[in-house]
Image (tube, rainbow, N blue to C red; front, side, top):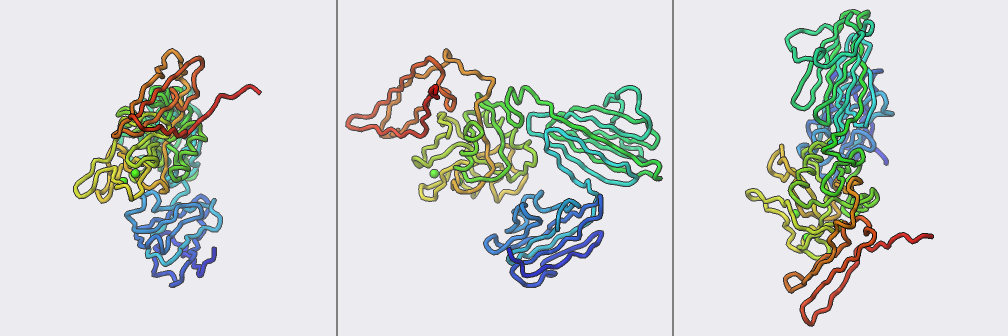
Length: 458
Ligand SMILES: [Ca+2]
Ligand SMILES: [Ca+2]
């Protein structure tokens, strides 16, 4: 990619950069001064205007390109932290975006997000530092934390959280102040120089915790130190026997896939690769489980949009699930004043795939507490929700009711037949008969969407 200009940001504690600083060329690279060791440079965009067809701004390779107007950009994407780990840090400009940003140097541990299943980090030893960490695990997992802090020799017994961390907010802390936010609960602890080394274990209520650490000690000799270890602790009622990152919903485990946004068909292919399909939502309970999964997903934003498995691509207006289960429940967006309800494809606008979303502009955030459905063009790129059969629900032939009679008519000319428990394989030793009846003088056309035969012994 060629750039027509390169300018360098001044190395300041706090600075401002905007489009007026940039030559009127089609593209530009703004070189960011590399932060000092153990420091970082936080850049926050507070003005943007460029039609997406004409240009964009990007903070680093492999990060989202930002275009349109600022309020269309998710808040987390409006800022970027350049650390010493970034090679040749630079802001890329394409076209001629109108923008303004503020940058300032912060501690290297500013606003760190950890989403790994387990891990550890250390803060200090130092006499001055301000850090914040968020540990965010997939919904259905608590965060089991062990904190070790202080400077002196180790206390004999492991301390219980109740006598160490409390909500005493009056006292000024001359040492290391640790505050821990766990949903609605907030705890605070102050380690003073000379305190014994303490070890505290905490299991969170929700699937994320936030730790704010502020060190303000007086002398080098009283440098404060903290080490944190964490691991997941599954909530069995929510995850059942599903794999890590998946939660139980009906006969399936479901998971939010947020690694990359994909078109509906590619999303379905990815879910097939993971062992299932895009998720079907068969009743209100499953909708509620999906809402919880998505609202509490690590990195979730109010403007997140997910593909689910419904499509009417085969027959306009006749929605079906990619897993073949009956389409008997729906959670369409009901419409607001001057904003039409869904589905709103008139048969010509090509909205044949179903997405779930909390925001229906122009109503401003915070968005609804439930992900309502909207039909949309299948080539749009969204996150998606996959399902796969839950391992804890072994398929029992005795439970199967697979004989069915389907009567087609002029008002119901199409029907879907699937093997019992689809997408699982047929259970052993069952015989299923599906009888399909059509009105007189009509023929039946069978269209196989998926046909798998059992593996034959070699
Ligand atoms: Ca449609
Ligand atoms: Ca629509």
